[in-house]
Length: 211
Image (cartoon, rainbow, N blue to C red):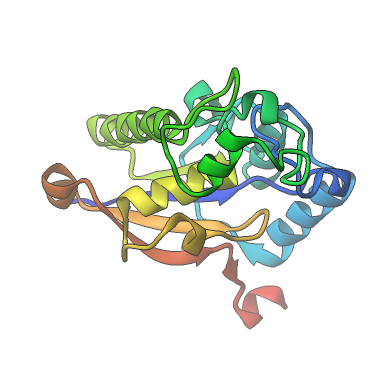
């Protein structure tokens, strides 16, 4: 029975002036440094082949997809967008100090919803429904190689839910432009809804390939 491979990649870096702020649905582009860093990774390391590329609609993901997979038109999926932080968008933890709901959210209360935003529970449900739909679609069409260019929060959460070995979301955190490859075996997926995380990407290029 064939296996299916999904390569999850975190988008490139955005402006360093936004560091420490909650940037969810705010549609900021890659910074110039972010573009250069992804181009360098693509030139010096190996991203896996993907016949189909799925991406969040936000500029930072679409731009990353076009750099890494320039020959493949990305399929934009709204449900791959980062968590909607509502009125917490663009604010830092210091800005939100004293907000009782924010304190509960930081403590791990998944039902707390930022004003005009999305709770962690709702965010998780949204992206899990979409991920399972993507896997089912790949199996129905027999498409064995796919990439998902998305956000750190989306990727870390999906890996925590479906990935083997099991780990917490923060354990899957990685730098911009990096990610993980998953192997999905239909029988195991149908039974347990899990995927083997078998590689960190992009891969180091063999010395003879660089010469």
